Image (cartoon, rainbow, N blue to C red; front, side):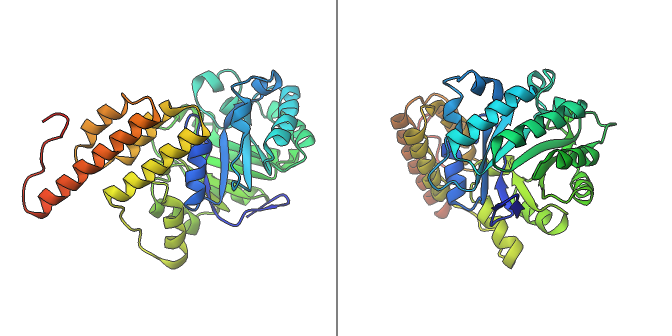
Length: 338
C-alpha cells in the first residue's frame, strides 16, 4: 500500500484505540505481524498547550516504522500547530486525523465523528494539517453520523481534494457507536469514489474475518481493532491464511501466558501505566481453566511483580487442570478458592 510517498509492505494494520494501543501494545503487535500501527488519539489542543501527559503519547518504538500519530480536534489553527509538533516530536511517517470517534463527549464537542456533520470545517482542518505536517496526512471516518446520512463516499472525495493521502472507513454511523454490525459495503463505495488508498475497519474479530475482507472488499488494507484482544497473533495468522490458505493455529494456554508475560514486561519497561494491564491481561485468559476467577484476581494487581507472580500461579493451575483432564479426572477447584 502506498500512502503518499510512504510504502507500507503489508495490508494488515493495527487500528488506533484510545486507552489500548499504547507503545507496549503496539510493540507486541508489530513483533507479531502488524505492518502499520497508529498511536492512541492525541488531543491537538493538549499538544498546543504542551500538556505533559500528551507529549509521551507521541513516542514511537525503535522498530515501529512506518507508523502514524493520530490527532483529534476541530480548530484548524490548533490542528495545524499540533501537526507540526507531532511530526517533529514523534518522527512518524504519517499524521492521521480522527474524524471517526463516536464517543459522545468527543463527537458532541464537534471533534471526531462530529466533523462528519460539518464537512466545510473538516476540509479546512485537513488543508491546515497537510500544510503543516510535511508528511502524508490520512483521515479516519465512519459511514456517516446518522444512519440516514450515509455520506462517507462524498466526504472522502472532499478529503481527497483537501490533500488527504488515504482514508480509513469504519462501517458504522457515529450514533451506532459499536452496536449492530459493521457495513462493509460502505468501504467499497468509498474505494470506488476516490483514487487514494482506503483502509476498511469494523468487526474484524479474527484472522478469518481479516482474510475475508482482504480478499473480498475494495479495501487497500484492513484495520484490526477488537480482534487483537488477547490475540496479537491475528496479523500473522491472517496474512498466512489470505496468502497461502494456511489454517489458523490454536494457541495453548501456556503459549498465551508466555505472550502475556512479554506484554507485561514491555508495559513495565516502556510505560508508567501497569494499571492498564488489568484490562489486557484478562483478554489473554479467555478460555483457560478458572478464567473468571483468575480475572477477579487480575484486577487487584497493581505492580509488575504482582502481575508476574499471578501469571505464575495461573500457569501452575493450567498445568494441574490439563494433567487432570488427561488422566480422565475432573478439573480441580480453583487453587485460591478451594
